[in-house]
Length: 202
Image 1 (cartoon, helix red, strand yellow):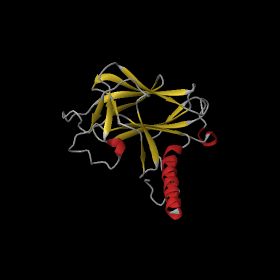
Image 2 (image 1 turned 90 degrees about the horizontal axis):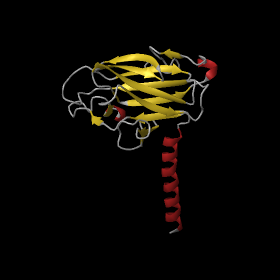
Image 3 (image 1 turned 180 degrees about the vertical axis):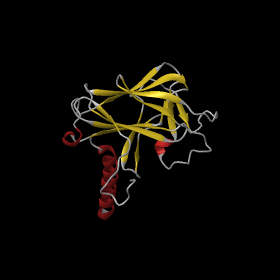
Image 4 (image 1 turned 60 degrees about the horizontal axis):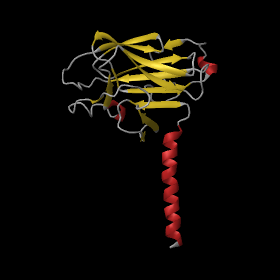
């Protein structure tokens, strides 16, 4: 009986350890846009949050059942669609505050969610600044290295009249200022490579 009780305690501790590891991700903000709930992605070992509280819009969509398994990532299955307003923004509050440098990644997959098989185009802004135009029906992501002037960052989808803006996921990572110090400015990335990895594209 004593051994059984000890096993229950051990299993409970292991379960708590798994949850804690998924939630730790210090310096991370990871948002699965339009996800129904928070979850731990065990494949990536990243704790993703649903986007309630980060954005005002509440239009949830899911990619077409014909393509939902095309990409083996939970974050590609749902998308937030912005039917109303010209400019819709996510507000990211960083624990580390302004003066630090961050990598911001926004991912987009139209996934024929509306059955119209179209290519939508809209602008992406970071705070008040133009970032890039999103114009693809395939899965794409955009990255920017940014030092914000305030204690929060806004990532905004701007309707330019060429289709309804949407977003699949949004992620923020704290960077080392000694490597990426850009003094309240931004660098849009084209490619990033992990030169220490055996897999160049990892």
